[in-house]
Length: 247
Image 1 (cartoon, rainbow, N blue to C red):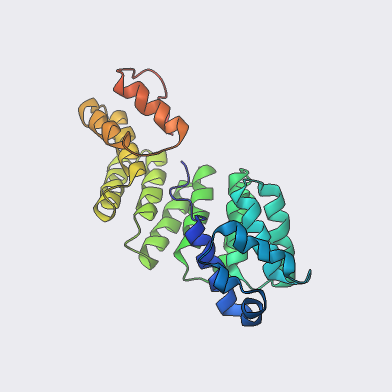
Image 2: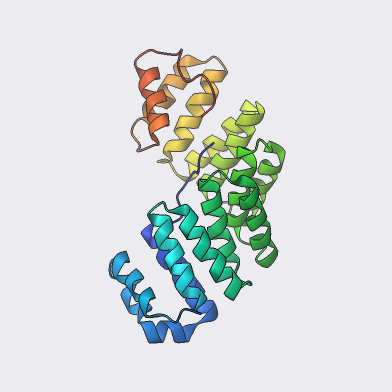
């Protein structure tokens, strides 16, 4: 199972930062001009962090996001940890650190941070989704399903939550339930490449190569991970012997 949607796009980085500003430190926004910068490119916005006092949690949080974008996850985690030490009541920082832990395959630590984020902010669907992802990677599929179900209850029109739960069902071998979730994801987002890919995998495992092949063809239209693309190319070329495992 993979991350369904990278939530740290440039737009989402801006939203996270503006969210924190609105919660905790309007003075920070006024002094640094970050709000004015949000319409410029990300590197200009992040350059403002150099102007912040060393004791400002926001500085470490912003720098952590920057390191995350560069895939320097260990350094990002160090900055998130410093931000947490300075402002331990901000759920979003635990969530960001959890995401970095997941990228490093440190799923127990990711789950622990998600637990803290949920304790602080129990109505945020993304926190349950991230915990569900980490649980699925540990093959704790029942827990994962519960968390994705909670995310769906909180935010029922988000396709990636259905894809996440469908992945967990697939890991358990509950293919009919998985199909329902992937189809629901496509109802919500007809361009969800991962939903097509996972439907292809399910139908392949059920022995229906005709439907599976049609789903792989649909999935081939999207920019998926390299391993997914390799499996798709194999199937479209008639090779059903490789990549038999659930990806």
